[in-house]
Amino acid sequence: MLLRCYDQAVAPHQVAAIAGQEDPVQPESHQDWANREYIEVFTSSIKKIADFLNSFDMSCHSRLATLNKKLTALERRIEYIEARVTKGKTLT
Amino acid sequence: MPLVTRNIEPRHLCRQTLPSVRSELECVTNITLANVIRQLGSLSKYAEDIVGELFTQANTFASRVSSLAERVDRLQVKVTQLDPKEEEVSLQGINTRKAFRSSTIQDQKLFDRNSLPVPVLETYNTCDTPPPLNNLTPYRDDGKEALKFYTDPSYFFDLWKEKMLQDTKDIMKEKRKHRKEKKDNPNRGNVNPRKIKTRKEEWEKMKMGQEFVESKEKLGPSGYPPTLVYQNGSIGSVENVDGNSYPPPPLSDSTSPPSPSFSEDSLPPPPAEFSCPADGNQRGPGLAGPKRSSVVSPSHPPPAPPLGSPPGSKPGFAPPPAPPPPPPMMGIPPPPPPGGFGSPGTPPPPSPPSFPPHPDFAAPPPPPPPPAADYPTLPPPPLSHSGGGGAPPPPPPPPPPGPPPLPFSGTESLSVAPPLSDATKPKSSLPPVSDARSDLLSAIRQGFQLRRVEEQQEQEKRDVVGNDVATILSRRIAVEYSDSEDDSSEFDEDDWSD
Image 1: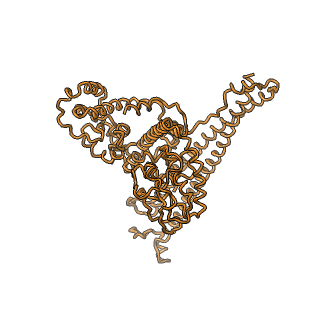
Image 2: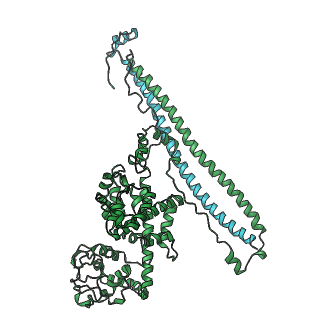
Image 3: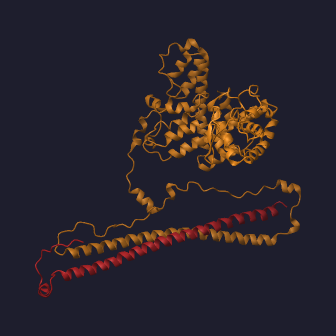
């Protein structure tokens, strides 16, 4: 973060600052720090949401894949049973 | 590293040039906040996408589950209605019933453009399209798409397909040869005893210590005992050599008793037995019994190195040779063509532009000379020929002005001419030249022409039959592991028309 020289007229509320303290831009930088912290909270929350989404996605995919595997196995078994049962009847 | 499928858009919040305002800090803050809002927007878009995908998947599963539940209910009803007295018990019934085959649907084309997830597709669409080289296609003589020389997504699949088809052909030819030999040699009962012995020989080998096992396999094609570095690092020389690798050397010459020539005292006479069978198996030239002595005296150096080296390496696979011949064995006989494909194939497709033409004349190269000799010479000639990939490699020297082909071999030229006119290949200058040569050559060329037309037909057939990985692979595996006598006749024509 670069410190810039602010070319501006000293506002009245800063006169007191000048009188009392060394740094005329201190309130501004304080405010800036506060803003940055605020923004940092936002961005870290966004990252958390993104992480959550990723892990949610992965876990859902893995669960759905397990389900898929079970479903396929069930389907095959049912097919076999149907064949056993049906043939037994139709050829009599 | 995982592939980034969804990229949240404004990547950098405040890396941009500031407009000139009085309060820059506030300006930066405001810009950053605005970018944060944009990021939230793209995040929500991606979240909706993710959840949507999961939702569709879950929906398909739900429908499958419901259909399964219905089937189970129906089955339940049926089973309760089943009456054991009605069961068919007759033998005929067992035989006439259709066997149960579960539906083995293989998933194919998993990583296809259609199955690409939407965000990745969007990323892909932001890329530049390749240049419109296909506009040049009408100007090509060989009828190939011009864009394929720049970028060909189906290149590797085509390569693999050609290799598989070639392998199936080779396997069938070999099988036919074996069958012919079987018919020719009624004494083929020896094959089985030999195979039985190999295991014994393996145990014999091992009995003497693991370090001597390598000795048989490490023999060079010279038949001379090379110095070996055994598995445990000790160096030794093998002199019991042989004829292992060389069954072709005539039996009569190599009847010297095996034992004296063994310099390895630790290996008793049994090596004589097992050195023979190891190769007898693979070559199977109908040599009878253990007489074929393993030990060829050094006076019979390698009969044929190219022939020798495959059998020489085969003892390495001998260990259980009886079970299905491992694919490497099948891979060994046609090493040159895949080698020819493989090595030039690895550079990016643009560089060997002649290779897409290869599938067209993979078969036509004259049968006796190994095709390997042809391929390295290929890249220059196709480029030099005006016809593009049409000219075959066997040095079609620039045709000496084809003088009187007609008087030379009238009938042959006549018969050559029609196929010529039919097969619109840029070989038009060649047949007149070949007719000017000997009768044999013209006959060969004629066979050439004929085969080329057949080749086209075969290719058309192949295109129609099945262009997917599963069918091709299944066909190849079926050919490799089947011992069927009834081959398809189409390949027979290939053999006999040579």
